[in-house]
Image (tube, rainbow, N blue to C red; front, side):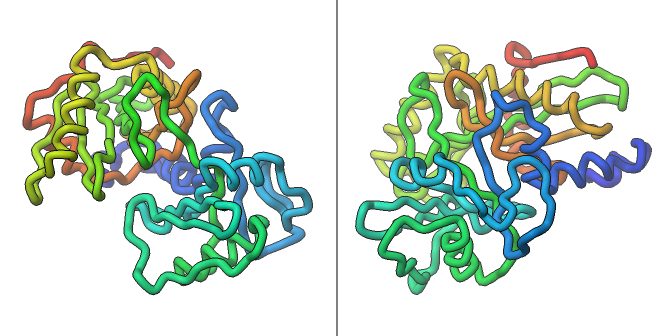
Amino acid sequence: MHAKRRQHWPDQCRPALQLLADKAALLACTPERWRAPFRLLHLQQNTHQPHGIDEGYPEIPNWWWEALRAEGVVLKPQRGHAGRGVIRFRWSGLALEQQALFRRLPADAPHAAEAEPPSPAQLLAHWHRLCRSEEPALAAPYLCHSTELPAADPAVVVRVITTRPSPEGPVAVRQAWLEVPLCDGAVAFISADGVSLPNPGEALTAAQQDALDRWTQQLKNGAPPCVRACLEAAAAMHQRLPAIDQVAWDWIPASPEPLLLEGNGGFGLLVPQLFARQKQQPCSLETRLNP
């Protein structure tokens, strides 16, 4: 579907798709107010890399130690997708805690043996053991969403799909929804105006339903500024890219500014289609910006 739609776009949108696929490169060209500090961790050393890339770890930034002892550090593949290998690490004072944010770790997953908080090189080596790969990993502090929203663990992600009718046309927000962790592994998809998709699996527990009700009521009373800011930032980011028709952006609705996780050019269409079927048109939230 994506490839067919892009056949008549300049170079079939390949420059934009290549940039979106490289998470570190995308963050490097993101305005500072919309990005957290980050490092690209890799096995190669003594190779010149752009801003934000860890070159042999000559200096460990202060945020590394602060994040490990507080909310944690997240490692994910530089070119991953579908939540693969996204793992949160925290130093409890005695050991390294690990939590897969989108998939479960196997029961026999190894634990780090370090007696002190791990350096970037040590954590990368442990992440490689967990993921059974040696690919580069993007490291960043674990991000929390704004207190304008109810509490959730892990943090809520706002997905924003931006669209452009032509390479010179205006950017618009086509759809936006929140991916909300409830409890016991359940996730709710809630539009920015408080309508949730039906749960196709097992019925929600009472605790999960209570959490869902809190979220939908909060959003039906009006999307808070932290959510609206994600839509505005997504439209602005789309304009910064080479020509591309549609992008799905993932944001943490933080305060005072949203923080970008990543952008995706080849994204799943099931959730957008389900929201469209419910005839939810986020016209009041649509953001149009002239290039």
